[in-house]
Image (tube, one colour):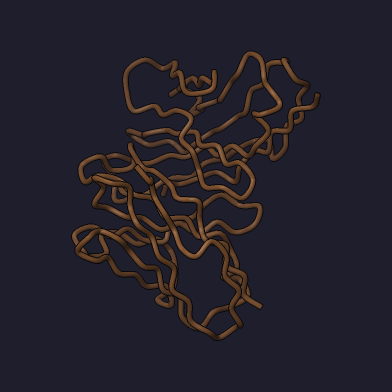
Amino acid sequence: AQSVTQLDSQVPVFEEAPVELRCNYSSSVSVYLFWYVQYPNQGLQLLLKYLSGSTLVKGINGFEAEFNKSQTSFHLRKPSVHISDTAEYFCAVSDPQGAGSYQLTFGKGTKLSVIP
Amino acid sequence: DAGVTQSPTHLIKTRGQQVTLRCSPKSGHDTVSWYQQALGQGPQFIFQYYEEEERQRGNFPDRFSGHQFPNYSSELNVNALLLGDSALYLCASSASGTGTTEAFFGQGTRLTVV
């Protein structure tokens, strides 16, 4: 079964500073990788996804992530954060060829707090 | 486009009761998945419905059941509620053939069991 580890439960960062949220997944022959954002009392919004091709993926709101197969990582980055980026971020994985191909497996989340 | 809509937004139930949560998928979507998000945790897959049948199920007991209607909307039923069932229940819809790659989530239903 797939698993996802988000290495930091909370990340405080000053406004306009860069940020990296870390995500590692269990190895599989093939994977789809996702980052979602959840604002308080809301559902999940897709930030970006890696399906195949270029390992650098750009998403909404200036976020990007890099797929590293050898390190089984998919870290999320933003060069300059805003107050409005304060939210919880979830990394997720699915196996396009396996028995779990219809489900997303999520990490426990990282709470990003942007400090003015 | 209204996106994925869930009802109700909040619900309080007593231990042992039964509850039904509802989900209307995004226009053009025919597949509905349900997830449970406990406080401080990531969402966990409960099951997925396609063509009115449960296509895949996560590691949840039989107390959790569902239904999909001909208009693709879906219900999640939980029987014999436990305190541990308190969580945010998220519905995600997608179009058949897209798998997990184009899943859209609703705002969720916050269930509190007392």
